[in-house]
Image 1 (cartoon, rainbow, N blue to C red):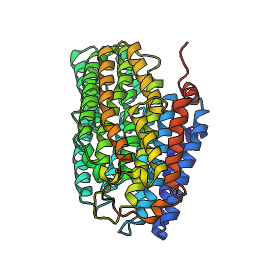
Image 2: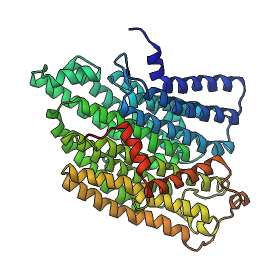
Image 3: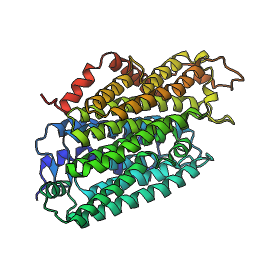
Image 4: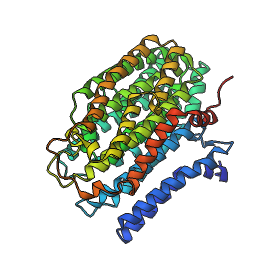
Length: 497
């Protein structure tokens, strides 16, 4: 098959990020310049986001049965690129005080990982799925351990390496079983084979079911769902704030997209077993994540357990697709993920800002104690953080409320009564630790640490602080007036009349 200009346009986001990676690598070999390489990375991500508009206009969106850039994948490509862009902006100030000379390689690893995320969002083939999974995971080994001078960083990196390797082995063995049962690796071919009942033997059906089950165990590790979540709080605590952001947004979004696409390949006869499996995992993740977050005194660990709960919430949409193929399920998942990405960018952006000014203090910069009485030193920053936390809690007039409202409506309309009630109860529990963070901001400061004088002046000038302002404004605006977001989702997923 000849590769045409249409195919090249389809691959534009991957090609642009790939070219940016090569340019940054050659530039590092010539001369180290952190500002230049940060600018190149940000420009590459921005150009890739713009190029998605060209991809959207193409009619033929399949590339050699390996990649399918359809309406479903467009949203996830944008979210992966926005997450990568935000992480690269937030990392710059942290890299300025990095004690080693190996600062610039950070952006190489981030760009390579983003290529893996795009591949996962567009995959139509089990080999590309595994390639994307490894491309997004392998650079994270180095990125998580990049702050090697932090006593938690190397421990976090080793934990992620071991458990990521285990999850990859589950996924690879699951792929092998599905291939042995069907003889195909393409999603399209596997779907046609299973739906036409060409596989008649019980042995082949059993083998493909076990294969998909093993892949879902691997996805559970990547998504940090209960009971595969044990690495999450330690890794979030040990990793730099920008990488914790990348883990909770880009990495999870890419895996969620490929999970949905893979489950849609299998016919209804497979759905009953996996619905029960996902129901159990969703309930456990939502409940356990929120309960464990209550007793945490580290802001990153709180957000780590919160991310476990939020991933459990998203599974309502996945189950609605499997059980009733609800026409609103994909739109609901998209809206919820957009709200979660924006709030996560804001939350980790503020953590990055605050921790920078305590970098030279002998204290845990991510402790909730550091945020005590922040309002009396930085009222604007505290107000923005309050908006972001309220959105995570799903309080009305924020974008987080719109996302949860869609989830609950979807759960009720899909007759997932018990799951919806369970998620609602878990959301009530989450309000406790979210309010704890907010109250902590407005308490009277006690034994306050010395703050860098820069912290008290013109904090809105730097790029990372501008991102926090933009995200907070978006959360409020779309929470009060969600019509632009709903219109955007209808462009991607046209409503079924």
